[in-house]
Amino acid sequence: MKNIPTFIFDLDGVITNTEQYHYEAWKEISHELEYNLTKNKNEELKGVSRDKCLLKILNWAKIKISDEKFNYLLEKKNKIYLEKISKIDSSNIVNGIYDFITAAKKHDHSIALYSSSKNANYILNKLDLHSFFDAIVDGNSVKFSKPDPEGFSLAAKLTKSNPENCVVFEDSEAGIVAGNKINMTTVGVGNSKKLNVANRVFKEFKEIKFEDFQKC
Ligand code: BG6
Ligand code: MG
Image 1 (cartoon, rainbow, N blue to C red):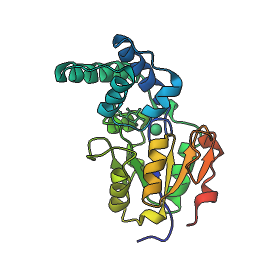
Image 2: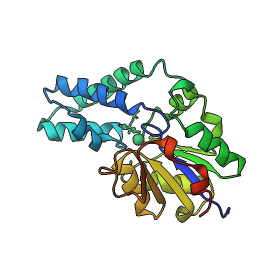
Image 3: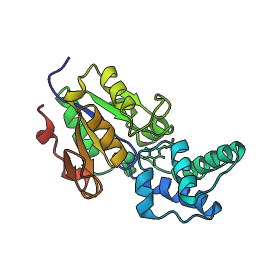
Image 4: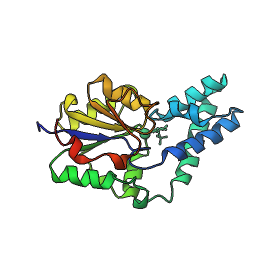
């Protein structure tokens, strides 16, 4: 077991700005349900699995639908989302990510990904980042998504790290809550008011310096 931190990255909203496309796709689905999904309400969907997002929207809209319609809407949301991300490439990597990951790898830190998305591997390939990760945990690997810590525990196990030795980078409250539950160091990227449960918060990833997180 290494005595230096393992870094666990979220994908949507941290490594790349695909979170906006999730929002746009859910907005279209919500419109079909005659529900107006606001940007503020969408914050509660960040980090949450696809089916749990739809359950939340149905709950907010106070609507009950059949299982067939539920599955149809899940598929439709994903189709809209995949269409929106079809053209992304390495130019869509957030500023500062590449430098941080390359510096961390140079200093022998393990790098893991934990994303609630079932599209994570596909996106990492499009960004040409797949090979940088020592472990990849996605929406297909876990039973319970964020705010449950299952995925973070698995990422720690796969990189042979103690959870207390892991630093998590997250843009969602659900992800920060999950990391906190198993005593990982949580770093929020985004709005400090929304992410105030994190150990530290930065407005943008480019403000984060590898040197500040090099030691446990
Ligand atoms: C998370 C996003 O990374 O993945 C959520 O923050 C999204 O907004 C979730 O709902 C599931 O994504 P997908 O690609 O499996 O529908
Ligand atoms: Mg995210």
